[in-house]
Structures are given as structure tokens and as C-alpha cells.
Length: 74
Image (cartoon, rainbow, N blue to C red; front, side, top):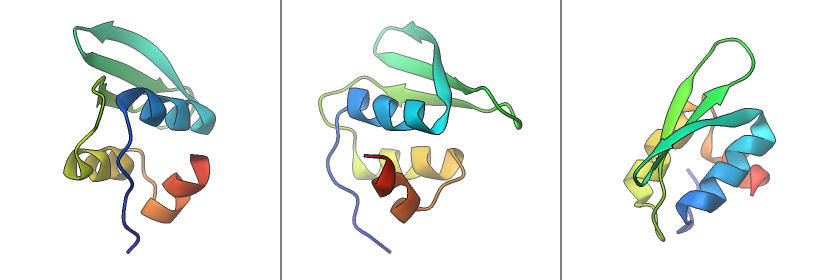
């Protein structure tokens, strides 16, 4: 399993937007993205300077990606 880099919330959002997610809304420091394709998924990304590696791994899992697939989106 590859090691995840330290990324900001905005970098994570940019990577997921390349995958086809769009910004749905933002409340405070949490950005909600939704998938435009089926299945309709929602992913919440914290808008922090550094997203914790465990949180980032959970976001990658919710997107249905492997760590290697996510790293190619960066």
C-alpha cells in the first residue's frame, strides 16, 4: 500500500473534481462534493491546510478508489 502525501483540502477537492465530482455546497470549513455519475455519492472534505492521513484515506475509500488511483489524479 502506498503512503499518502500530506495534502490540503483544496488539493483533495481538485483531484476529486478531475474524477467527476462537483462542489455541491460548503458549510464552514467543510466542502461537500457530489458525484455526477451513478452511484450518486457525497464526500465531505475538510478545507484545512493539511488533511490528516487517516481522513484522506477515508475520503479515498469513499470515492471508491485505491490509493494508487488517487495518486494519479494529483
